[in-house]
Figure 1: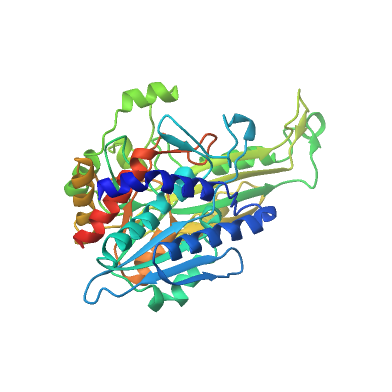
Figure 2 (figure 1 turned 90 degrees about the vertical axis):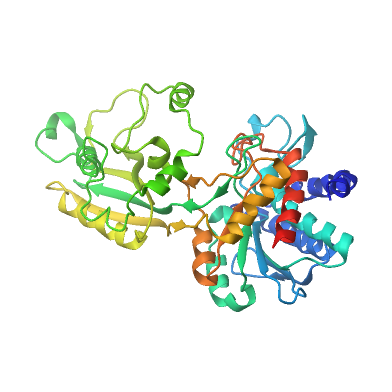
Length: 449
């Protein structure tokens, strides 16, 4: 298969560049037609690859593309998920070449969406195409569910999965939208934290007041906000909200060992970040704190005069943004209610409080011992010569939990990106060796099933 991939490499890269030229920015209403073009491109590519029942399914937002090939009687069914939408390209001036005019240099392809997720998605489409050309059939049953709203939190995919669970029924969900640990060290993520985000608004007087006339005699909204936010943690970094840690799993020796196998150099990281010290819950390593422990972070605060110089006022309004990463059995709605209750209980006198919720996502933990995941690790080892590690990621991909719960199937996060590829940033790129070896790995994986 390696020789076959090499023969088709240039043609595949030309098609990928055509895909990358489509500015399918789901967050920009002015790009709605471009997002539609992205869906059409995916549908045409799946048709050309030999997939059947190809559909562009309209939603209240951007389309979902479905396709399948289900003629491998008695064999497992794999559902491939990916997304064809991309992040905005701003700031444009920091790109070395235009974001939607892909270029290849230094054995990397540069463009918005190159690694997140068009390049990685294209790996699967081309793997199916080569298998069909070589054998006239696939070794297992395959379904595709490709969306155009991942970068805006997949508002229409969740209900689609719930409504079409029978259509999407499978033995494993295969996703390539994650990264290696580092070059040459593949990874299969087996844990993603859940997410919760909210904004806290406080108000005191009905207007800002002169600090000489009223200062010291009336409540200050910024003071109230700072006291409220500070009450959420103790001095050791533990979260002070009563009941917050309920549902957080105990850290077993086996889990701790699995986390410790992921390379991490804390001293080097401190130097790179310009930090004199790291911070977090005592008794946990950096990898444990950022991968398998819950968090509550203050993301930003606003209040009072923000312009040049000084304006001597007592602010009447202030706001703070909070986000949480959740693990285990922590329920986002329950955690939101606990934080809201804590804030109300600690609200200073003369201050009114309101809380607005933005994001909810449940955590998901995957068993690395599952045969579908172990066979993916085998495929990496056969192609790359290095067996995949099983990191616990601190971020959130909300739809992973939905797939796992609704379809009752293991999710195999078989990523081919690298952490250095500037996803969501200027000069995003994808290493071509991982594009070609990725196709080989997917073929090896499907054949092993």
